Image (cartoon, rainbow, N blue to C red; front, side, top):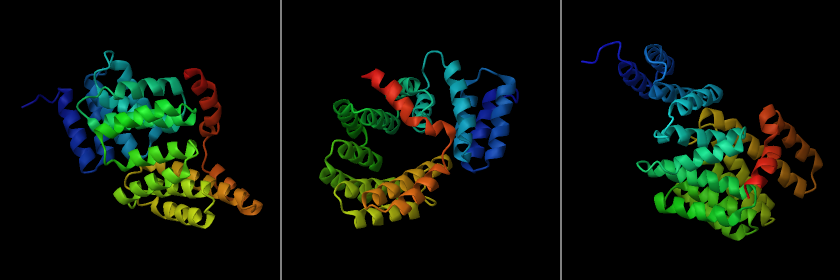
Length: 278
């Protein structure tokens, strides 16, 4: 039997409590492991994962960052997978996020994690107009997880950016076939329909997306508000195109009410750091 002063005892306990789930108890166990061994990477990974499940993304980020500092040889792929995923929504340091995503693509034992990292890299490249490289990343992701609905969502958004809404509609509908209750799939379909000037259908798809957010198990608690913001901004854009200024401003206000100061700097960061990567 493992001795109680062995941190692995508490790490195993923490993982078991995560599964129950009993998140507060899991945190206690992981912190006990750190009391015994302050440089235990797995304990910080456990804290990060638990906090992310609780929706405390700042605490999750801090613990994954600490784990990355301790993983000096970049051996533990799940650290970089999580930092890649979280960096995609935080936009605090784009270059670090690119690095973490690239490290995550080397996690050979986890095809789903590698595919997700490629998809996030494609998302960033779509945002800065590097479409050819985005296509390349998505091709790598497709080889790993050809039936992943997120892959089709990301590809559809690339197609919208490439001004190919017809293809984007087809791709988004494929994502919905694979995951009918995935809110971002319906939101992406709305983007495509909006670009096709089918505004009634775009509004309906947006309404479906909003109705699915609360119960969408693919969205962590910390990502639900971000998805709602995107939906509200999409409503605002549809009403802008329809010339309805009152409703446009209504939904802009609803979106901005959910924004953090860091998120308001998102486009400046993308333009400042993203362009430099070209």
